[in-house]
Length: 312
Image (cartoon, rainbow, N blue to C red):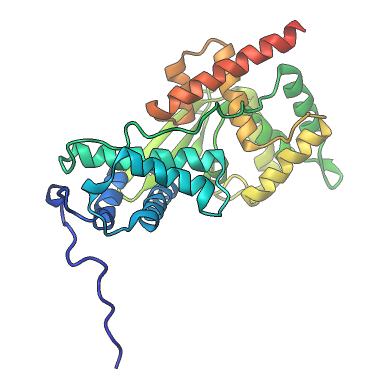
């Protein structure tokens, strides 16, 4: 006879108002997940945040009441995660886990479960993050020439040029590029075509509208005539798109690996140097105001770095 597995918690709150300072941390995670869904967070972000909090539970006992968490033991958790766990933790992962803690405990305070937010003052990693790479105007020209010279058999391959020009003008993420469909390209206004970046998580739907140049739309039409996509624009995997970017960078003699991340920073820096206001750039990239604070500072530093390179 099979034994029934006992639940981890005797009872779990069914509504945020049922959470008290004595509620075990692990018993709050499902309601926190529902909160993230309502906030429009992506499935990837939600999974990452919950995973980070389960890691906190692994360190401090997931059955601990939420009132037992202090700034001191949260900092001890971060120290353990980075140096004592025995698993490599990149700067990016560390920053995300700090964000997970801040979002979670801020929510607990907002719903009245805690009177004080212990994560508000937790330590960030010391020292600034390395400055990201971005293409100069000369790099852009060389990459476009390289992309235009790539072949598919005996004929010109329009996919590298479309991919590079698309990322240069829009700064979209790899996952967003992989989800693009024919319906997302719109030239109802011949002078100002646009693409739509659409996200749907559970019942939350989000959409960004990004203006593109008529030249990019023309390349898109040439690509369609060559590849005949039925729905998804790119008929290959996003991993193959990464390889294409790498090939473009190598043929253009770019001094670092060309990637989706590099193209995203290049687009943002390019727009900033062209005089676009910061709110427009933030919305174009689909960033929250919280994450924009650090991003905007990096964009400005990249722009200053380009000025210094041009002066030498």
